[in-house]
Length: 451
Image: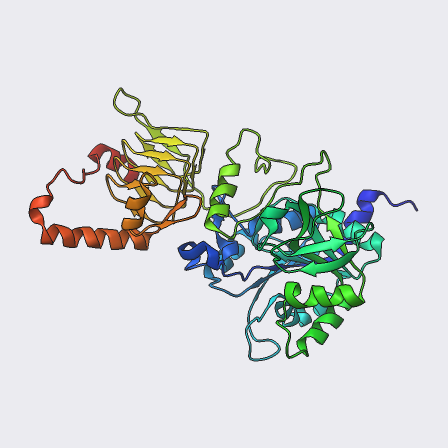
């Protein structure tokens, strides 16, 4: 019997269990992850970051998936139950939730390797031939079937998914590998200051994407060994990979674009600047990451919402959006939206202007507000007349967070503190404030927004 390539790949994916590591704190995102983990972040107008690796699994044919959670997981767990609970267990398909539950000892997950070790019984129970370990907080599209084929053909014990990254971008940010001509990993460094340059591509290094494939028996053996080492941090980057390349066959899978020499789109949205830029990338006329691709859809859960509505078209005010993405439930009442993303249920009142900004779900923007190059946290209510991203000194004085690249983060807590300071100032200096200091929202606009 002759087996086709597609049949061969589908057999490999059916014999695989994916474990998505989704417990990241996302501390470099500051207040944006104060109440939820990094993989739970809203992204791209309607998705969550976790939807990308999960969609990659489904589209690749891997339908046995465990999601390992830990840090502030409530919103993530709720999203997974609502959006990813439809797979049929009777057909061998599932997305299983694996919160830290002290399965092996009294500790919570102490590192990425320990997270797998504490779920070793789950791996044994499902008895896959291969375990695909994925980071839950990166934005990209990838067919894991291609990596599985390379892993099996190479005879490796472990494969590390890698991508070519400019050396300056990788420095102090990514784990990087040095490989021989057969892509066998010779060295691994965790976030080096001076990453090793690729011999076949000047100015680039090979960065780990945080995705791994193991032969199952080999993985279980190594996890048990690492668990007994008292000095280990029980982490793939710090411990397992550096140790395994000395004693085992560890190969690099070079994630490349099949159609050209450009590296495929892959972003770690672990900083405010990276999160803002990755969202902005979606607005390009020909984006490197297309979410309009029917051949590789990104699956998610979103509540049923009415269509976005744009109000008013007269000489004094027009509600419109250009080069932007506007989700369901949004009402733009006589405001201008330019090069921005409005997530679901955003309401914007008249005469306001939004430019190069990311407004997360249920944000409400008052009248005559100007927002430039900003991220507005979910549920934040921006008062009338406020300017954000126009004057950096004013932003800092208002208590907003300003990044090195000039992105402004505004949260509901920041606005609450600002409103409190303004109220105290009005009480202390009543003559300096009058009824025109902050214009009230136009009543017809408000009525439409509440409808």
